[in-house]
Length: 557
Image 1 (cartoon, rainbow, N blue to C red):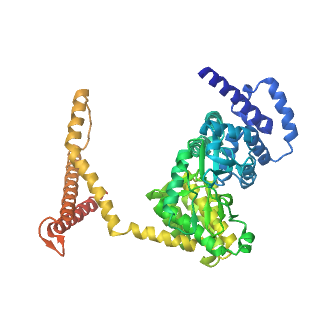
Image 2 (cartoon, rainbow, N blue to C red):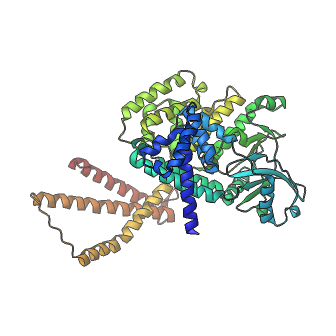
Image 3 (cartoon, helix red, strand yellow):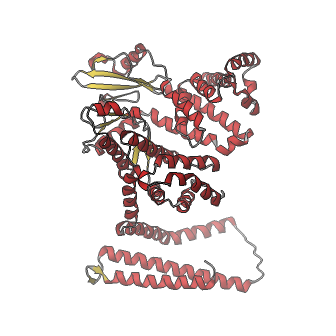
C-alpha cells in the first residue's frame, strides 16, 4: 500500500508540475530545478499549450491553473482571494471567481454515499432533491425532507477529499520549501508557513464533527436573540461525512432592493448584523470566520439566518485587548500609538524602520480621517493598513486577519443596507468596555493572585531545584575557571545582587501572606478587612520603595 501511495504521489507531483508549466510558469520550475521531472515529451506539450494561453493576463492563468489542478487548489485559491494583505488586488479579484467554479457531483454518486451511511435513505427521508443547492470544493448541499415532515439540508462531503487534500498539500509544501531554497522572495514571504496555515484551516473545515459542535455552541449562545437564527443540527443523523440541519429560506442580505420591497427595515438588519459579530468577538470569544453575502439570508420574520460554520476564528484575551486598543487608536487617529501597538503585538518587526512606517501610515490614513469621525470608513482604513503591510511585510496571524476581514465585511454590507451606517460607533462601545474591564479591581486582583501563585511555586520548588542543580553539577564534575581582574569589586557587586534578590523574595512572601490574610479574613478587621492583611501590604509597599531607591542609586536597573 505504501508503494502504491508513493507511486500515486509521484504521478500527482508530475501532473501538478505539468499543469504549472503548461500555464506559463515553467521558468519558476527551472529556477528551482524541478522542470526535469516533467519529462522531455511533456515539455513539448506544455510549450504548445502555453502558446495558446500566452496572451492571457498572469492573474487569469493562475486562476485557470488552480481550476485545472482540482478541488484542493481551488480551495487554496479561495483562501488566497481573502488574503489581500498578501497578494495584489488584481489577483484577489480574479481568484474571487473561484467561488463559483466547482463542478457538482452527479446525484447518483451522492445517493450511493448516503446509502453507505444510512443503509436505506428512504427510511429517514421522504425525498432528497437531485439538484444541489450549492456545490463547493469540500462538500455539496442538497435539500431534503425527513419522515416527520421537517425540511432539512444535507451537507455531504466529497468522497476521498481528505486523502486528496493531504496528498496535494504535501506536494505543494515540498515545492514551496524547494522554492524558498532558491528564490529569495519566496523565503522572505515565508510561503511554506502560510501553506501550513491554510492546510491546518482546511483540515478543520474537513472535520464535520467540529462544525457540528460549533453550530450547537452558537445556537445555544444566540438562542435568546430574536434577530438571529442558527440552523438546528440533527446530531443523531450526522457523522464525519454528512451534516443534517434545518432548512431556512430567505432573501440574501446584500439584495437591498428585494429587502426593502418586502417591507424590511434595512437599518435594523445592519445593526443586528454588527451586534451579532460584536457579541461573538467580545463576549463569546470565537466568531463565524466566513463572512460573505451567501452565508446570510433574511427570513420572512426579518431575522438573520447564518450558514456555514466551517471556518471559526478564535479570540484569546491578548488579541481581545489588542483589538480594543486598535479601535481606540483608530477612533482617536493616534498613529503613533497604533504602530506601537502593532509592534508590541508582533505584527511589525522591531527591526523595521518604525518612523517611516508611522509617516507613511499617516499619509495613507489622513484622507480617510479628513472628515467627521462619524463618516470614517473602517473598511478603507483597514485596506490602507494592509497596503503598508504589504510594503513592510507585516505579519497577520490567521485569526487576526479573519477578524479584520470580518470588520471590513460588516462595514461594507452595513453601508449597503444603510448608507449612514458607521461601524466605529458600534465597535467603540465594546472596545472601551474591554479596556475598562482590564482596569477593574476584580481583574487586577485575579491577575495578582495568579502572580502570587507563580511566586509561590518558585519559592516552594527553589530548594528542590537548587539541590537538583548542585547534584547535576557534581555528577558531571563540572569545573569552571574564571579569571577576574577586579575581584573585590565583583564580590561587592555579587553581594549587592544577592541582597536585592533576598529582599525581593521577602517582598513577594509578604505580599503573598497579606493576600492570604485578606482572602481568609484572618485576625482583627476594620471595615470588614483584615488589619494584618492591610499592614502586610503597607510593609511590602515600603520595602518595594526602598528596593527601587537602591536600584536608582546604583544606576543599574
